[in-house]
Image 1 (spheres, one colour):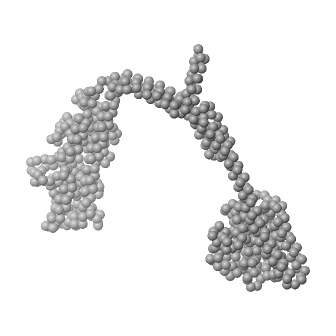
Image 2 (cartoon, rainbow, N blue to C red):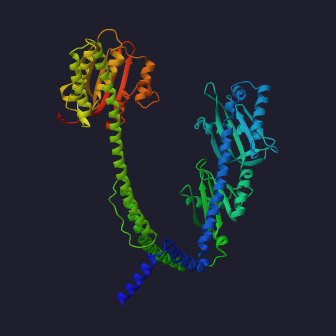
Image 3 (cartoon, one colour):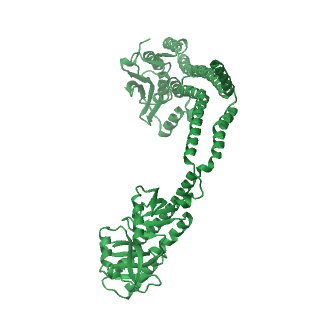
Length: 606
């Protein structure tokens, strides 16, 4: 029975595994999403509690955030307004003037009137000058103010704040003799722009009821609760249920109970006030330190909901656990081949092409694995073809460049023999012919791709012997190459074209004998050779064009093939960072620097 069940399960699994990926996803979605959603929908009425509570909490939180942000922006505006006297030169001047005349009164009144009209909730603005004189502007309906009663308090509040604005929480001021207003104030010490000394105080009085009523009433209308605003000292500033603004002992008690639950910058909690369960959502302003608390009776939120919380939680957790187990098992089985392929692709990315994927099923992933294997085989074939093609191309380029140089050299040598033979019969012709044979054997008969520095320098000496027969006492060759450099390998015909160029373009046009020096040294792990002559040199434009041609520039054709071919062969053989560099000065000589290879630890002479 067990084995039979195993066979059935295996057949079902093979059927599912061999399905196209699209059908697999359909089966997974039907099994893991449709069934739980259908069953949870049947119990959706029992989940209303959490949904409604969460929605109410979120809505109340957004309203609290909005109210707090509005208050923050309002206070921030007032703080900015307190800095306006710093930019008014007339106000700065009159604050330091001891006497009070008509011009001072007029200027102060105009400035205070402007400030008083920036916000409609401002009931009074005061300016205290350096000598304690108080100027003010009041809102309509207020006929009399008593700033002298508050001057000492203003000086005390601003004394420790320096040049920063100060917010004074809710307090009562006397207006029109027997009336009182509940306000909060924003104060700042005014500093002289020129002397940086304190020259006065600016004070804004804000009508609390007028300001907070416009902010709190929309919140209470939406949440059907009550909103409290408490300052940074824990004092109640506004209670939305008491429009008269008079604080009662019960208000203070409720505010303190709510504040005890405030432990983070924002959040929510449930509390019982006078036997009524309340949901409270709060936010503590980071700018003013004031706390905005929105409290909503729970019976207003949960009255339409019929609850069966335990059964809903148990059912939901069971479905989630079951779906999680099945989803994990199927996801692992389906993604395992993909993970294997990703792992092999990473190996290919790092250069390892000796990988092979073994697909188990005939679905899209299996087909993808088969194509991956074919791709690896094709990549190997292409890399091998590219390697062979590059080697053939490099050999062809080397042969082509070699064949370009040899006829060029033979032409010059035969021209020397012809000119000497026409002039007279001379036994020197025999020596010249012999040296020509040595040159041709070196350039044509030897088939090695590389020779030693010693062979190259011997070839240069033979070449100079040919020239000395044609131009007696015209050229002198000095070779100062250290012994340890002589066994180093180098491609053939590197120095002779450089020497030939120096002779015919630098030394031959020069009046009198010339000297050619070949030296070598080590620099940054590379072998550096220098062929230097004391010929006629070249001007800056010609030198710049020559170096540009060596770098593959457009001026290459005007300088022939000698130096360019040597430079190209060196770069093909050793790499783009090697090659020739020419330095010259008109009337002084030319210096050709050649970098050919990294120095090796051991070299043996051929």
